[in-house]
Length: 164
Image 1 (cartoon, rainbow, N blue to C red):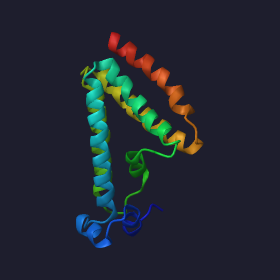
Image 2 (spheres, rainbow, N blue to C red):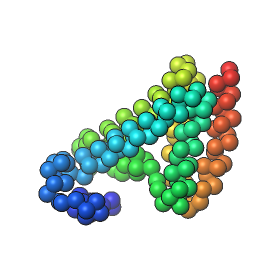
Image 3 (cartoon, rainbow, N blue to C red):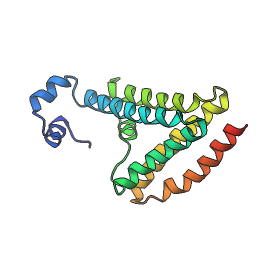
Image 4 (cartoon, rainbow, N blue to C red):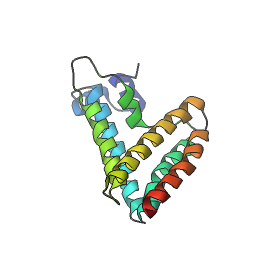
């Protein structure tokens, strides 16, 4: 079970009252805001990489995620994926799953933007899914092997798609 508001406030060294004031909807709102913050940070990095050209930008996304995993000695994961797989409370449509959907859609749109046809959208979905999956595999295996194995294949697909 993921930590509650009390544990998260303690970890952040934030007063519990301030935490509840800032996030009156509780853990779901806090998770949603964290996902949106992370999503925007990654989107900003991705936009910078895409400015160098479509191929460089598309290759950068897996490389950026790999760097995060390696630099953290395989401790960092993907907060967007973590929230995505957590089951929301029954009968509710909380803000966290909506934020996850928005972030994944934003990443796909950014990656597909250099080329607007159907193949670009499919490739963007493949890249986002592969990167999220490989981060999860790294955490489970405590190894950087998965991103190393997918990076070359993704780079080949990206190069082929851009050259077509």
